[in-house]
Length: 537
Image (tube, rainbow, N blue to C red):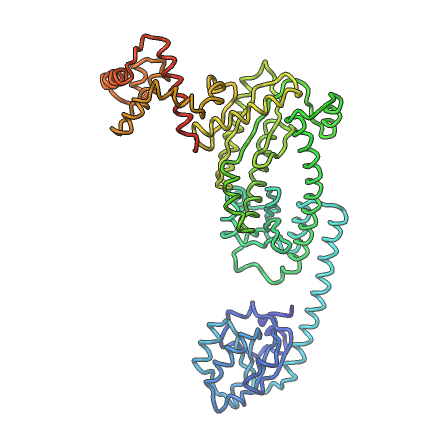
């Protein structure tokens, strides 16, 4: 890097030179050397960063060619052009001024008494001094970040060090672990980073990508206008990004090793693959987990993930993006579960994450309330930050960690049941499934379909033909314990209207409402029908 055109013009020996066009480029164009324009095709012999000076002799017969020359110089990366206007070229042509202003390319009026050496020597002297200062500054920056790396510092000290050099509020969003870090005074900036999803942040806030090749590890965000990311920051940003990459890779290596060992241990518990009690206690001690007492298994499953992954397999970038989304979902789930249930075992299982939670029998309702709130928060955050949904199943409480494999099976069955009957993005406790625990093994077999068609088939066919909703009416009546008045209120219809519909249902089904056996058969048939109906949801 050299000096800006504005800094060049502030050199005392050059204080009589004036800008007459392209003033908007004074702070963005950098001068690294000086050259003399003695041929129209000078762009063939320069490398960029030159302050081009000329007596104007080559322009005396064709002043309008200056616009074309300015365009060529700008395209070649030159910093500015200086012209002696009093001898061969009297004024700046309008076309040249328009081109210079449009391209942000400064045109400078050089006094007629200036020799070229009067310009070249002080400019090169200032450029050399600036480069020496830059090298010294770069060494200082490099050493400061190097010491942080050697000392094994984390992200926060790296951001603080960067702030010392660029003096603006900074945030770093770690896209691997889903964490946000700040070195900022502005509450509004911090809130913006925390509350805005990452794709919008990247579009909205000035940032730099922290990446190696195509592998993105995160983003540095700055509380400035997009035009205020200065070139003078480049050295500091380069070393800060290098330090962040080393820090994240160390953290990633440690995390992957811990994750592999942790996942193996939890999976051994869930799949009943532990042989000795002492083995469990010893392995749990390594993670500081207390697995004594009653435990419950919670399974958080990403909806439709395998389907999306299958579609994306033809596109490597899409597969990579899906993997990043999965990691972000897991991070959200782990973070929010730990807020209520600190330091609990968890493991990743393909497209789901499983938790083993302590759940004392005598405080089950409190446990269930806290867990329900946590699950709802997880589902909300996952949808907001990834546009994916998750379905959650919770197994029953087991008196020992050695029975958690049963709770895991229950949680898996529960979430599949709720997904099939109610769609994606719901949660269910095994304990709340009721008769569905039994029906779950029956609903999709031929005998089950024949069973419910024997009892409510006429009603199903009637609704299809007449576009009626008698099935929905019957389901509401059953849910209201066969009481018509509360059912009418729930359906928001008049009581007499419901009485008429119910008589029609009874006539179609040849159904005696006072026969408890028939009521049971109809209720079971309706449950099997709804399970079958939503099988492909």
